[in-house]
Length: 292
Image (cartoon, rainbow, N blue to C red):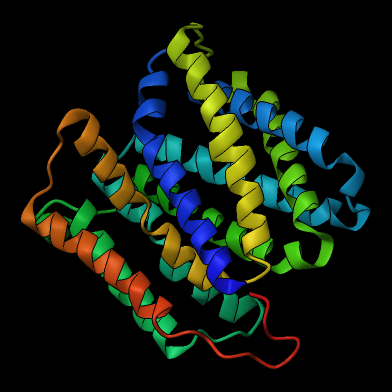
């Protein structure tokens, strides 16, 4: 079952990576928070219609927490991107990979296995090579945008931990619906306050909302909540590290974008970090310690 769950997470990563170019183009015609509101709103309506009879009242609070963390992550990422470079944004967002096992060990006192720890280190180094320009580390400095983007990584990390902790307890259906509804409501409350409203309905925007709402949100986050009943947050974070690799492959196919040899090495290390863990199946842990 763990293998099926992690294959499903790879599918989610492919969906996220292949929608990057479409979302980037759609955001030229609609403000970010408004786009997120429509995306999560569509997902919330669809998921509520499907899982209404399976919702668990005990899952309301953790689902709200998951939704708030998810919305915060997207907002921090967007606001940070306006004040920093895309390469640093990609790298700092990727810090959620090492933050997941660190936060899990602090919150739930679960220490990652050696293979997981090595996989995290290798994938994080690969993320740096793939996203940061050569020589950028020598002149590294933190500005307001970098701090906001780091907040995105923290929010994403804790979101994965919360979903992994509560989905097996209250049901993945409740977590999926609750977090989508929460994110949509937060978007409605902040859309006109956090940024100027900008909206031009076009076929591209409609298609982007439909695909991200149905596939990249409703399907993806439901799959994520289900899959994390059968694997750990650390292994999930490693799999999600593949997203920039998938995004580059998509951009290469659609626009002909190429990577430098250094970035290709980084992509290979990300893949290697994931495979390092996948080829060393975890053994069963004692009862009460399998959730992280």
